[in-house]
Image (tube, rainbow, N blue to C red; front, side):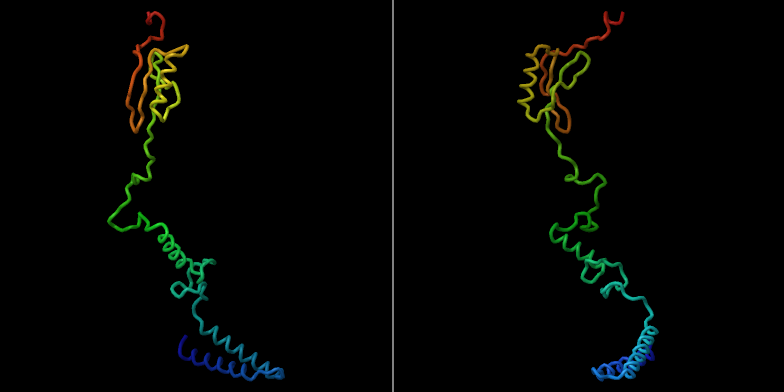
Length: 189
């Protein structure tokens, strides 16, 4: 808005203010038409003075920014910044945005990986290879009791073993002697 527009608009608004002070319940229609004409003139001056688009938010920093209806100032950008600040109050600072001194590893951090599980695997020798003969157990004593019951059963295997699984496999104990049995009769003659 230049100085001439500012002066003309100021005069038109002051005139409207005088009209408003003079209004009463018995104001004649001729006077009301005069107020209407002055009001249209002031609106035309105002339309000529406005150069930009109407602001979409009540934010002084981002008047034409994106709108968030839930924000008090309708500004999505400022509300996002406020939400992040509230989140960091409860959760602490974001570990990935602490600063330039830390760079996230492509393999993740320890808390992201599953914890290793410790299990005991009961296995039986079937003549060719070791195979799982029961459910993996979380308790070693329970797994040993299971294998003892299998050895005393009606159809025991040639050998049994207990394998400890904890990020890797380790054979803990072997019952019997595994002998390789050829599955072809008469040794492939």
